[in-house]
Image 1 (cartoon, helix red, strand yellow):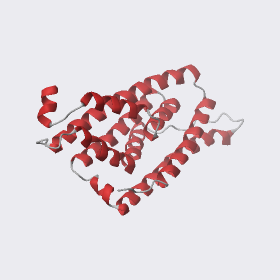
Image 2: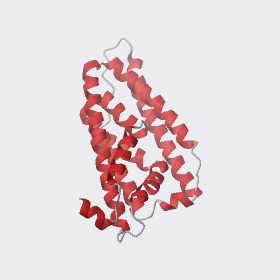
Image 3: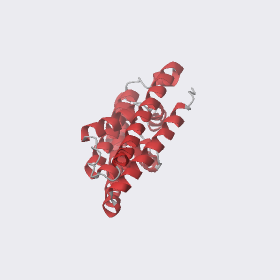
Image 4: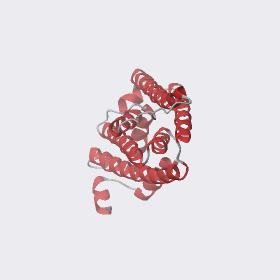
Length: 220
């Protein structure tokens, strides 16, 4: 591994891994989405959410490696467009969760069927799109990865891809561990009422995240 890192011009991989761990442990959209989907849908749903988020990170790593993310760093228009699309998508996800939280209440006193949970493929797509449409993630990949690549690295694209692979792998392992913990908590206290409350809380938090994303300003 050290020989490959030296060949690609990578350095300080221990610091890189530690920083990625801290970043993964910092609450954000990806963590919230994964935990909320696990608590409301179970372990399989949580895994689908985690893999969707990881797929979005793969897209960002590829964009950074091939220089496309640089467009967001220099173009206010491109940044604003992605920002507003991302905020709108977060609102849509939030409304879906709030709808799931409210639906059983409409059948009060009746033997109503539980709200239909989204399919695993839908949860995967939501996780991926939520991540891809966040311009802050794209700029982070562009700003963070070069710090661990030597200026004279012979194959910078390969170096970007290698660091992106390490980052996505570590992030995926962290999210899957989070799914395991959240699924355990769900089994200990799972109930239809709790599920509705969690959907409602998740929807409200996603609305807040959408508002925060909409207020992000472009800085070169």
